[in-house]
Amino acid sequence: MEPLNRIHLGESGTIYLLDQHGRPMLSQEEYHPHDSMLKQVEAIRAGGKKQGVVYLENDNRKTDILVYKKLPQTGWMLVGFVSEQDLYAQLFKLRKTMLLLASLLLVLSLLLATWLSHGITKPLSRLVQSMRHVQRGDFEHALSRLPPDNRIRNEVGFATSTFRTTVIQLRNHIKNEFELKLLRQQAEYKALLMQINPHFLFNTLELISSLTVQKRTEDTLRVVESLGRMMRFSLKISDDLIPLAEELKYARYYMSILQIRFGDRLRIDMKEEGRLERIAIVKFILQPLIENAVKYGFSHRPDVSVSIRVRQEGGRVSLTVADNGPGIPPELRRKLLEQSASAQPHSILSSRSSRIGLGNVLARCRLYYGSLFEVRIDSAESLGTSIELILPVQEEQQHVSRLDRG
Image (spheres, rainbow, N blue to C red):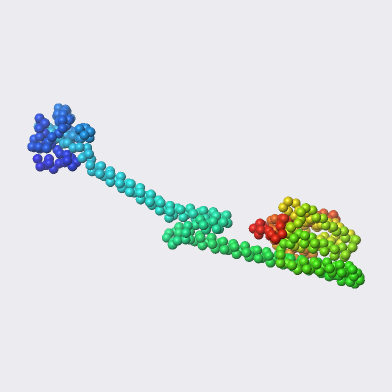
């Protein structure tokens, strides 16, 4: 009996040795199967199968397992009874353990994914967004998109810190370059402005000398008076913009000097159209154009006609100076337009050309207004020249936004 007692099915199942009548042979008193089991044992004894497994439902609606083997010759039979829950208890326990471990691994995976998202993926995403802002030139938003510059813990933190430093240095470099460019443009503008003053001054002094020799005292006084007012006006070079009315007044003083100098041989008039009050423009741009028109007109014909037209249309003001002179050769016209488009004041400052006045005006307008400035030059040989400057309308006490100068 001891060997059978040591054989177990599960925790509580036991193997029994039954005789040919179905009674236990080894005095196993705990042999008390329920009725359905006894009926099944009898059916097995009567059947022809030598061994097998039978699943039965007990009174508690749970499954019991019957294992049997018939011994040849004696008619004895080994029978084992065990509940399904008892037999598979270890497997159920293993299944629960595996489910627990799987749940634990899932939680750890979620925590790891969250950490990766917070520690790597999210900083990388913010770094890419910051790069897009830098690509558009928006450095402030680029810096705000970067994560806080904490202690460097990994490669992503190092890359973010390095990119932050690069953005700050780039922003400062661009700011310095922009400020230097503005200072350089202003210096070039002032140099061009100072270049204008001697031209009309020398010519006017020669005129005064000539009038004095001719003893034309009244004309001399008128020229000196006009020159004094022009000099008082031209010495104010601190402001880039002046009221359009002041520029027109300055041009009229110069026109009066020219009228005295050339008399009836010069016909010059000025027309004003539109609302010109409170408009401000770059100073000293009309007088050089008038001077050029008169100078080159008299170099090719005895009588010169100059027409000046100032008009305001919408958001732009147009200043046109037209003459009946020899015209501008196509090659020179192309060169002037190219110089105006490129705004290279150093070439004007170092130029020995006799048409320095026109180039000076175009360079100063392009320096100040940038892409908002437009020039039109219409010229035909022996039919004269028309030069039109188109400027944006600016109110007095206001300035062209440096961001809009092109």
